[in-house]
Length: 279
Image (cartoon, rainbow, N blue to C red; front, top):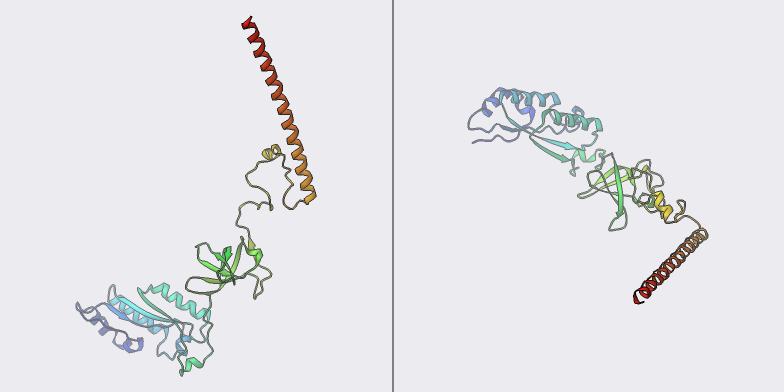
């Protein structure tokens, strides 16, 4: 079997019929690698490519029509100097349209001595996605708080005590091998003073010191006033605790007196019965 390697659009534009015949030969793989690099004509021009987007599409469309099931592989360079978000989106649309089964994506590298290395470079970390993350702990190096998004991907956020245990909306601005970094929305730089903070709870959070799961009726039985929390002044808490303790002691005393009276009555009854039996 023979496999054709890589070729650029201008080299086969005038030989498409012959290429189709070759690729249809039973002893030739129906495969061809045709680099596109970018779907933006302005970027292709800056790259000094000798073709435009229409040339690339003409080659691919012709071969897909004449060689049923052919595999078209292609290359893409991201972040070439001067590339805009619109240029990038044009490339994304091309990929979505053709769904290349083999796609090689490379980040632009300014090779020393080349004209492109002297051009204004595109920032390498461009993400700009907004995510809601739940902040749960401090990072090992103590430089960030650790949060996770809906997909349990780790996101590092600035250390702001008000974020801990909260859902925070962040702008993702950097990514690493096992993490992303995010800045809270509405904050353009550090230190962070304001951000969109959400509570992960469905209902209103309990006040500090308030115990969950206690109904109002049960709290009343325990003698716990609903307005008493850890924010209540110490004197008030002390008086309340003393009142509850006094009430509990009073109830205990009444219970002891009642039990003693019942006990004495039982002893008297048993003594009377015993006396009658003996006589």
